[in-house]
Image (cartoon, rainbow, N blue to C red; front, side, top):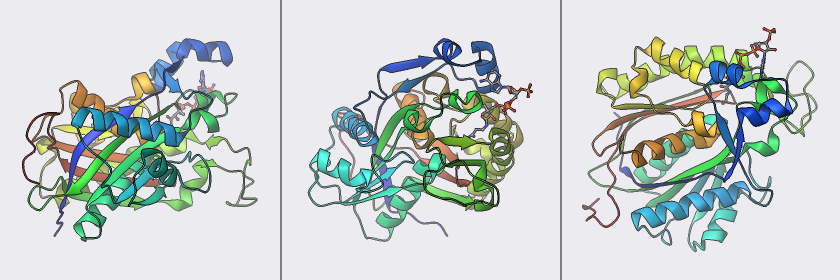
Length: 337
Ligand code: UT7
């Protein structure tokens, strides 16, 4: 029996100003807007300023949350930053965020589950709060993927971009957001998407130690479109609900063709699916909070909606969550949690 004592109470997001359009890429590599649009659905991505790191993007998303929801974060007792592009190997990006936000009494950890990072981060936050170990957790999904993208590899560089989103997860006795979860991994397929500057021999075959993304897009694609629909079914079964009870499906925004195929296999309407890839590209751990916040800002996601979030990617890993969305607007009275 799945039980939860945690609730998402606020959200914020941030993307850098600089845009990298399909036309810009056409000037850099042998590609064109028609190919990128047809194969991925992506039109442009945001690129971090040279002085802007993942911790900065994470903080800006939190400031956006604080401003919009009049929330204070000084009593946050845990910060989880989900990222595969930390500022440093150590200190953790979460510790940098803690210092930059001036939070005094919080634990701080980075969580790397690549594009499934944000849903894993929420899963962990829910567990920590439900177990009674923490009361108020910031979960941030933030990336500066432009720093690890090889802009000479046309099959890979066309999808990635930078950005971030943040949510506050708080203790709630009676109104939890978390209804069910399904997580999984396939490490034996990890060689299909990696970034290495350390390992000499991680997999059976030779690996490229470039510090940049190396991706077998087709293999990741095939894995995701078979794994995710089954995972979605499992999330719904565990909650004892049907797919028709879901108001919005928010998958990792990797590629629109993949999302269409997942919806087709799961017999779910693409019209009830939210994604952030058209304007922001694939921002790994940031795609789901960006899509979520876009849905909130556009007035699509409403209190009382059931949201099916599904992250998948590097690892390979995946994590799906069914969320009962109930947050309150700035200035309105927040009912007792
Ligand atoms: O987010 C984390 C996990 N990552 C993913 O989920 C990514 C999943 N995979 C994908 O999104 C897609 O595999 C890509 C968008 C990365 C690539 O699309 P694809 O349809 O799998 O293309 P492909 O690599 O199989 O290449 C098909 C053809 C090739 O030409 P030939 O051999 O058929 O003549 C490529 O050389 O398209 C060519 N091609 C391009 N042409 C123009 C590859 N990249 C480009 C390009 N512009 N940028």
